[in-house]
Length: 183
Image 1 (tube, rainbow, N blue to C red):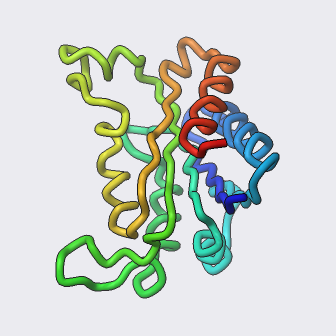
Image 2: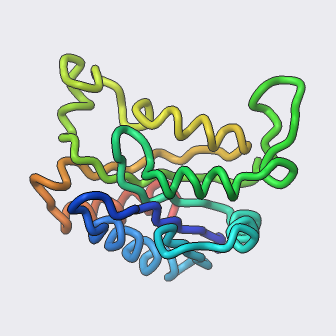
């Protein structure tokens, strides 16, 4: 039985109400709670920094459920990272830059929603130039590596505004969690 922290990083932006990200976070919690201890945070609802830090310290796996706005996480989610990821608790100085992470016994996973179509990633002549999802999220992976955490393969839902397919997104997420977490 693992201790899992599910963080919903959605922030209301324009016409997006966050229903898909909330649905995916709820599916994760329900699905993972069958065989694991699950804690949650919905950043938009507010949080206590010290409580969040304790959730990280208790967790074996941290799952970030987030939309991608302008190729990164929403502003509130970035603020959350700035406030929660503190020196001395999550990382310290090291002889080699980026090697002072203190969360080395933890894994993390990004589950993301994109308005970009999947073809924008797969085709070398499309926008992302053939980069994989994890390559497109490299800057976010660097932040987690700085803390010493180990990555699990990311999950992506694509074209979520123009072609929402909730059933496909949910079944894909469950299959991804089963494979990555060995459920």
